[in-house]
Image (tube, rainbow, N blue to C red; front, side, top):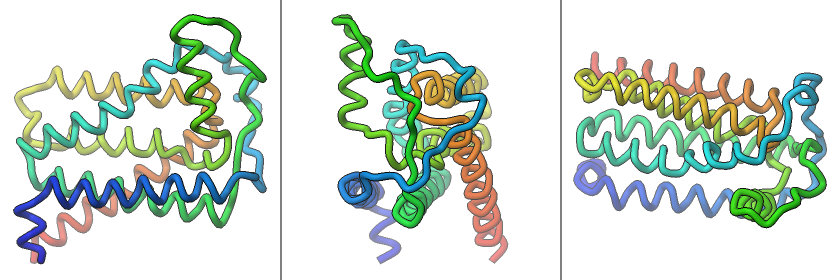
Length: 210
C-alpha cells in the first residue's frame, strides 16, 4: 500500500486534500456561533485595508505552486509538507469544534463597485468570521516557507527563497489588514507552524537514522 502511494502521489494527495476540504465545509456548516470572541488591543490599531485581499488570495497559488515544485524537484519534502499541512489543518478543525471562536473586527460593509470591493464582499460571504484561531492561512504559509527554505532543490535558486519569504510575510500581514484574523490568531497560527515543523523534522531525522 505504501509503495502504491509513493508511485501515485497526485492521486493520494488529491484524496487527502479533498478529505480536508470536505471536513472544512462541514465544520463551517456545523460551527456557526462562536463561543469565544478573539480580540486584542493591537487589532484596533491595525487599519482595515481592502487591497489586502490580493496578497490574502495568494495563499491558494502559493500552496499549489509550492507542492508542484517539490513534487518534481524534491519528492521527500513534497510528502513531508503535504502531510504536515493536511494533518495540522485537520487538527485545527478539531480545535474549532471543541473551542468555537470568532471575530468582531470586520466593518459592517465595504462600499463600492470596484473589483477589489466585490471580491472582498464575496470572500466575506463565503468565509464567515467563525473558526479563526489559530489561523490556517498563517500556519500553512509558514510551513511552506520553512520547507522551501530547507529544501536542497532551492539551493541554487536563492531568488525563489526570497520570493517565498516575501509572499509568506505578505499573506500573514494581509490576514490582519483584511480583518480576517486577529493578531492572536496570527501568533497562534505561527506557533502551530513552528511546533508542527519541528515534529516533522524530528520524525524525518528519526526515519533517516533507522
